Every structure is written in C-alpha cells, then in structure tokens.
Length: 108
Image (cartoon, rainbow, N blue to C red; front, side, top):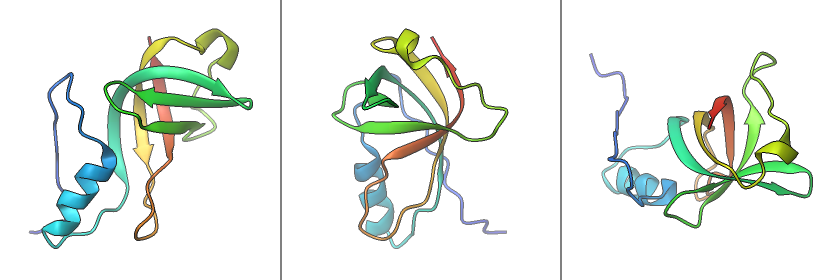
C-alpha cells in the first residue's frame, strides 16, 4: 500500500538544507508535509527565543516544545552549545521555508 511516506537518511556531516530537500521532493511530483528530524547544530538565544543554527548550513530554526512533556532547557545555559535535536518540522504553506522545529528532545 502506498502510504505517501519517504524516509531520507543523510550521512553525518552533510550540508543538505530542508529547502533543497523540499525542492527535490516537489520536482519529482510529490508534496511535503511535516518532517520528523534529528538534526545537530548550535543553540542560539535571540530575543529570548531558543534557536538552532544547523551545522554546515546557514539554516536557523526556532525551537519550540512539541508537547507539555517536552523538557524546555534553560536557554541561557544552552546558548552556544552544540546539540542534537529530535523533533518535527511542521508542514508549511506552498513556497514558504520552514523556520521552526517542535522538539521532543535536545541532547548535548
């Protein structure tokens, strides 16, 4: 049965962006919905918002807890640290670039 899912696993150290992945998917006649991700990068604190600069790219995502149970780290203690984030990049409107990760976990 066609469930309409794609599982993409990238090697550590790659520099592919979400925008590049989305273009490749739509170029082949598919649409993107939400994306379940595990991504590494550096935590930033900008205007009291917790963000992640993805390693090897210029992409920056705001980090939001996915659920009330998701542990929201102390942003001041995390600022500048390299972490791995597990979560979901929500579906965006056509032509929009995703800018948020709803995280389930952040690990140093």
